[in-house]
Amino acid sequence: GTLRPMILPITTSAVHPYPEQSLVMHNLDLDYYYHLGLNSGLDLKSNFGDVKYVLMCGSPVRAYEIIQRVMQAFNIQLPIGQTLAPIGKTERYSMFKIGPIISISYGMGKPSASIMLHEITKLLSAAGVLDPVYIQVGTSGGVGIEGGTVVISNALVNDLLQPYHSIAVLGKIIDRPAKVDLDLCKQLYDVRGEIPAIMGITMSTNDFYEGQARIDGAICDYTMEDKLKFLKYANDAGVRNIEMEAGCCAAFCTRLNIRCAIVCVTYLNRLHGDRISAAPQQLTQYESNAITLVLRYIEEQLGLE
Ligand code: R2B
Ligand code: URA
Image (cartoon, rainbow, N blue to C red; front, side, top):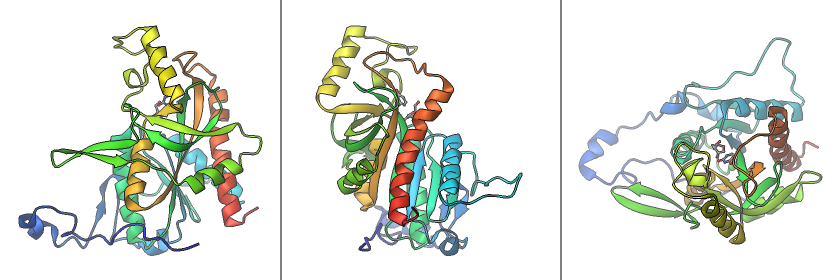
């Protein structure tokens, strides 16, 4: 395909609004990816220069599961007793890499996801990676669809049902459009095969309980009717699932011209309840649906099949 510039070269004067601080900033020849435990002084080009896909998920355990599935897909077997080690530090995020695929966790919520996105993107940019594809392989609550269904987002809305990710910058609210790559979205949908998958709107919230109209949080100042009215209203507007990071990922990628897809499996149908009560093996099977679909797409793209 064509080479798309992912990000402008990292400069200090262009990004910093206060000229008087340029003295502090101008000697930024070493960039620290603080929360990843890496920096630009390392040989990023030889370690990360081949990256094509960044698979992002919430939990470090799932980031490890995903890279194990990648290893299976690439037919890589480690000697007995050896495991794949995470790259960098693991206090905040866990990153693994096999060939052109990174699997990295972002924690929970948009602020946590944002920090990871800034740092992995600066790192890949410094490594000379030109056109990476970012895919969120997440989990979510379904709205009007059954547990296990994979939702490939064709649009994102925030908790006000607006297609933005809003952040405060220099004392002002910036509404960043949160869009996905619709070609990528359709290509992912096309490889679904037997996997229950739909395309639909994903609502990205700032909380799991009140922010997602749950009535089982420690605080709940509304009734069951209020909850269902809101969820049905969202469902009528096209919302098919609810999670907590996609708005940030999509807006970040929209801003930097990075191709991005959001693929989240649903754990339950929120019109029927709030509690995630499926057995752990069932949830693992649900998660596997999203991973299988994404890896099927990547295998096809890389010609591994
Ligand atoms: C899905 O699952 C987490 C909450 O349980 C959150 O990170 C999300 O988006
Ligand atoms: N993640 C969420 O954010 N909400 C759910 O209901 C399930 C997973």
